[in-house]
Length: 239
Ligand code: UDP
Image (cartoon, rainbow, N blue to C red):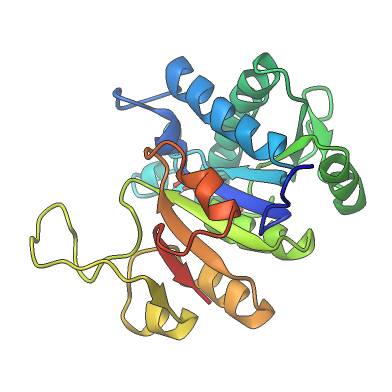
């Protein structure tokens, strides 16, 4: 019989940018397929998988707001962008033979389900990938905050934040060769040292509700599976 994963239920936060691949806009079908394959390994291992996806590859509210557009309208456009990404991921995941359900924080129920907590948990228990779209449903928030909120709501064992580097560094590892990777930080260290991981709202939500967070590199094949198996040398743990 199969060995049980260390983490039974996870919430993975993917930024919109993680879906772009080599281009500087939109969704790469190759990237979506690769992500879906990795998620398949988790489902296969018996892990319940929830996703929150951003929208930065399509639209960010603050962008046009800086040039005269109403911020709330801009944020609504940003939230709709996350729905577009969520639908692309749902499709890619189902192409790999799994079942996925997009659940939106804004009602667009001819396109996807509404987010209803108890129904979301049921999907997870049945082995379906639950994709939480439209962030928190509120302007002035981010999808990082939505990820913290949903992870707490569904009682995830771990929240995973996918980035382009393998964890949290003391400085930008791309431009500073003295930058060192932290293996572990407390929530308050992240906040006090202003380490650019997630916005403060998202970190505080995790801190106040005891939701552990691991920051890791989404481009390293196999790391997701190693994390749910309990590897402690992948990325940075914040708890
Ligand atoms: N957004 C929002 N409320 C939320 C989540 C997102 O208004 O709860 C809007 C906001 O305009 C944001 C955009 O959606 O800029 C895309 O989300 P985000 O910037 O978090 O995406 P990511 O950087 O993860 O791709």
